[in-house]
Amino acid sequence: MNTMFLNTLSQLARSTHRQPTVGGARSMSTMLSNLNGNRFDDHALKASVAPAVYDSFHAAVEAGEPCDKATSKALSEALMKWASERGATMKAHWFR
Image (spheres, helix red, strand yellow):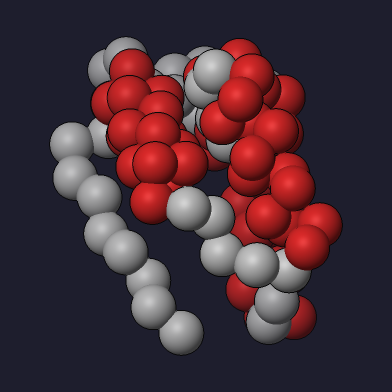
């Protein structure tokens, strides 16, 4: 990450620390403390898909191979459902 960005983020966190919310908005320190609360990690993946899908995904990762179409579709649907439950309204695919 950019050093200037990290310094600015750090300054924002310090300047808003323990400030009450205004008009129902969350303070920056509250948002920063919840930064990892909405991360779709392996634990969330395991809770969101069937055991066969989870195992198929990890087998593909270990083998360095792409997932089969059924596994990919199940993963995509689970991720979209998980994100929608947290307020997401759109999705995008990033191709490299």
